[in-house]
Image (cartoon, rainbow, N blue to C red; front, side, top):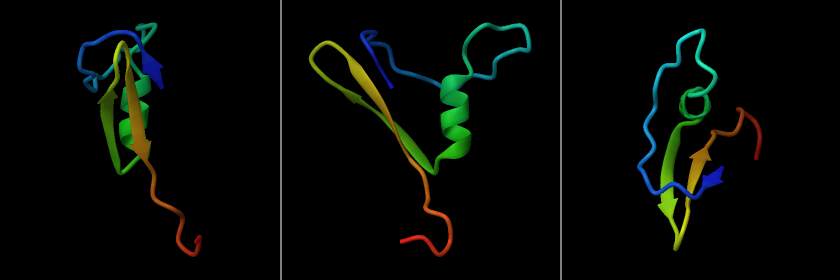
Length: 56
């Protein structure tokens, strides 16, 4: 996920009637680590998910 906005992302809890604000919350729930990489004119949000047991 990437965008041109230079603000730092933060997890928020969207209300039922909100149109947005769920993406990073879902990333945080489904991954064991996430972060932000800043580039010249954009930023990238990355996430790390654990492999299922038995997967290699």
